[in-house]
Image 1 (cartoon, rainbow, N blue to C red):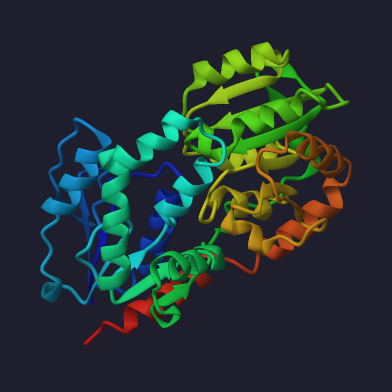
Image 2 (image 1 turned 45 degrees about the vertical axis):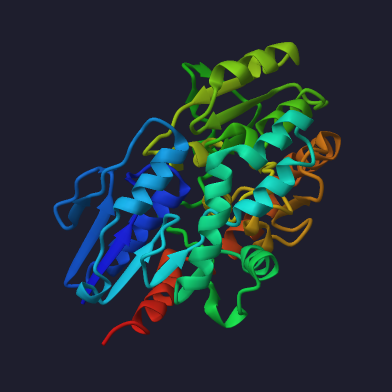
Amino acid sequence: MKIAFVKRHFSYYGGAERYLNRLIEALKNKAKEIHIFANNWIADKDLIFHKVPILNFSSFLKAYTFNRNLKINLQEFDCVISFERTINQHIYRAGEGCHIRWLQIRSTYEHFWKRYSFKINPLHQYYLKLERQIFEKTPLIIANSEMIKNEIIHYYNISPLKIKVIYNGVDPLKFSPAKEMEKKKIIFNQSFNGKIILFVGSGFERKGLLTLLKALSLLKNKKFLLLVLGKGNFGKYKEISKELGISDKIHFYGPTKEIEKFYAVSDIFVLPTLYDPFSNATLEAMASGLPVITTVNNGASELIEEGKEGFIIQNPLNYRELTEKIEFALKEKGKMGELARKKAEQYTIERAAKEFFQCVGKFLS
């Protein structure tokens, strides 16, 4: 069996990237050859890489030239699976969700000129046109949540028979609850016995970091630390935390290969995202035994029963409600964390790979 994956940046950082790598690992013993079509990558001796040239002058040119220069003969492969917005594949995994929905959400809080730019920005217009082509032409679409499936049907009038929902999977051994004694580690070269709150997500605006900082500034218990992991404008949010009077409680990190260590020392996980098709970090946190607080705009919230494994905020900008949920989750973190772990155990990477492989099987000769 000869399989190809399409991913512009093939690395080990970021939720989608970690998911793709775990999926490939699960498929290695089933496929004779696994090919990766990418612009840049971290080498792996078991994979065959193909360079897709792009122009790096703008986000629009990156997206446009990657799609244009992706030369794949579908007849050469049993199945081609794209994790990018491209039009030449057997299966498209809609990991980015629906761009039209994201613009709609942004329009509810952006100022007039920003909203107007959505209509003339070539990247937005290209994505909207490209999405329609992808959803109409690709034989099978994999959505990572019911939320995304419903959006594709609603905005593009696609038959639900073309769409398969496969929730992301997690490695329950790599991400597992730490013993309470292990949580009492020395952090930042000093002993800390307060509460540790974790935020994981690249693109701080979309992931709702501003809302979280506002919520934390209102916490009654001031003995806490927030660990921020991911790519984003650190400087901007350091200034905001300073204005809110909590700069000494916020610690910023970039991407890390050892993200499980941060889950292990944390008490709860908070992601007040404005839009997230399915946050891998949410499932990783649950597997690590952490109560999760996120929003209704996170596809992963479909795995959370309100008040049990965590909480779901209906309005992603409501930082006062977020403060209340954080305070409650910190008090009940033991019981809620146990329930979160039990729920996550149902959504392993093996389960996701098996469901994915069943979809791939439809294209095997």
